[in-house]
Length: 422
Ligand code: IMP
Image 1 (cartoon, rainbow, N blue to C red):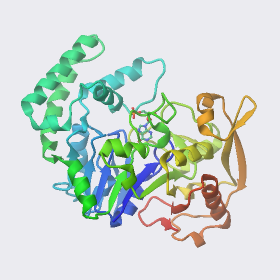
Image 2: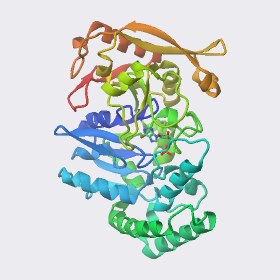
Image 3: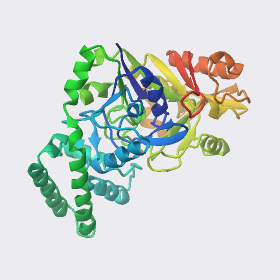
Image 4: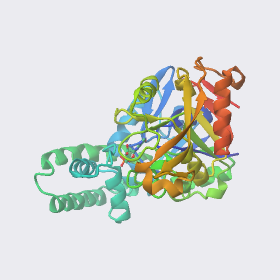
């Protein structure tokens, strides 16, 4: 029996979907604890790409049951689309998916408020426009709709009516197209009805499985640096993607999690606005984006690219208590003559190696880079550490030393079997 968490160590998009899929070979239950349809976890089935946004990627292994935990904000319309997508791959979610009673529901109102705030704001966050922030606002304002509410139609209708009147009283007629809202409500109600059969006691299932010695995987979405409490606020998401979020989001004690696996890309990317100390606005950034196909899985936006930021990564390791690391997309660095690692930040002439000290001055950072010779040789699809070029091995070992955490998994391509286990 083991309980393992898989958590994004950077700004999201680290390739968690593939690592979850790899680990799920031996797993009986996968649970997500935060976020919603803002996530985009890419996995491959028979060489076909599939992107999941809300259903934990473990669902594609038929031995796995899945929980969408209390800490999530669930979008019924998106969920129905995902269920259909999985069915088109002959993957049946019936009896395998549990939406926890206390997870919150993302309504069409939330999506509209998200779009409205982003379009009007002078300080844009660059959200995914999936209604995530506004749904969490309602949750903390104690006016949200719970998944449990979907089980009682008349109660749900009352809550929707109350949200509609709040919206019309708070916003101007010009801000929203009322007809569009009413149309989307019909589809929303239909989807609420369709997903209601999956709304079950996820909390009890998780604890029962723990008691019966099942192998459990806890799947994080987004990444550490987007954490509402510890990330680059205000350019963050509205939940806790770090290991601390597991306890609150699933009602599962942190001391019962045996392994926290941090997922790090071999370089760094970020989507949306906000500081990014190692960002490359030059041909190297462009090259990383092109070779790494760095475009958002949820929004299609080009991702900002940069060298590995070890200052942020060290902070992330401390914050999450990572017991091991999975390093992804090593092969993307194959064609670089040099690879760079930022081990400290220079701010107004002073050098900082602790992220927590530097975090309020990130826009003023001059990254201090260490240069290492590249390997100019293909690592694509390599399956053993010994087969990697010497300089690639050195790069991996160096990162492991800098982060004081063993790198135990290396991904060398997008497909299931392009992976090294050390
Ligand atoms: P929201 O989560 O849609 O509110 O977006 C807030 C910030 O988090 C924006 O900068 C998004 O680009 C970023 N974000 C949200 N989800 C993801 C993700 O899954 N990967 C990477 N960035 C994300």
